[in-house]
Image 1 (tube, rainbow, N blue to C red):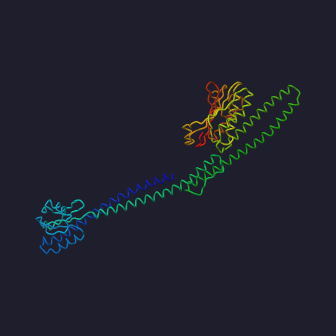
Image 2 (cartoon, rainbow, N blue to C red):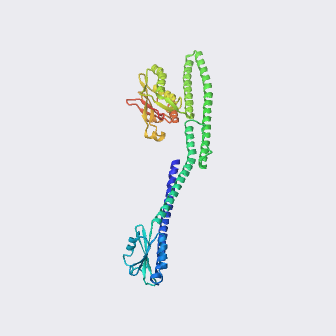
Image 3 (cartoon, rainbow, N blue to C red):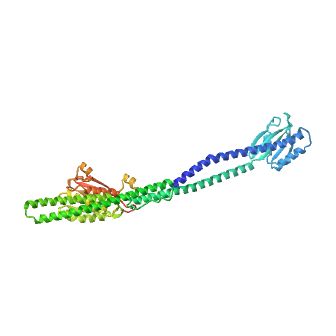
Length: 464
């Protein structure tokens, strides 16, 4: 940001300098040229006035010689001609003789007013000698323009140095302003990133930067405090509900188990067995609700996790259950894959996905868990930035599968997947995936069955 502010300010300063300094320089240059021309004309008229006393009034040539001496002292070349064009007197200057001859090429008898010409570096003024239309001669004065050119060069040099100094000062000031504005915004962005990663104690500094930025930081801090309070209250509520529900439910199950063991009546025993089954289902439902609540209340603090190793571990944990049901369960990892997830979240997601798959696959079926690295999609690159890869985890089964409508509702609470579960397993997976910036979807398995696809954020810069 500070660089953009500096560039914009420099552009504005340069534009202002071009609009102000260039016209000023052109105006000063024109004034220098006009002043130089006026000075040359004045000098020519002084020589013409002295020559008039000699040529028209027939006085002594003292005034003419003095005027020529003064012109020579100023570095001018001057010559006085009579009405016939013959030279009467001149300064000892041969540099402008050619220019003088050029000025008189049209003849002296036709000159009725000043004639100004430019011959190379010389400015020549031919002034008539005489009054009332009686031309007694011509005075030609030539002056080199080197002095005015040097003066103009000095003017433009000073203007350029002034403009350059203004640009440098403008850039320095713009950089300072940019940093003054950008630093608190950068700090606010870093704080927001830490807060989003699970550091609920993160707060933005409010002592630096413009008033609007400080106000934004204060608003963010109030939002963070409110969010932290809500998350804390939710977690406390989950803990309280867990304690209040689990304790009486466990005690009730123990009493029912004792009564079932003590009864000898077959009809009562059958009723007790049904009651035990309903209580087991109720316990599973309570556990699922608490798991969903924890998933929704949790704010993950991501860290690098080996997705391939976790997949192998969870498959090994569920393999005895699969073997007991006559289902072949295996894991496939083509290469090491490092994901960026909250600790324990991938294990919980995999447990629910594998449990759903085992519940839906009949005896003799297959369930495969695969892990691989894949290129990020265009939408993921927009959301996650230029992360090169995602870790793709798939749980593939060859069971009866799910209809399109069932797949659309599967991630809602109590959505029926057709596996006979409580409808909360996939909801837990969806909540944990969303909290970790992952994506979960259900697709048909080629040849029949269901494939759960879990796209996990990869560690930036990791060679997955």
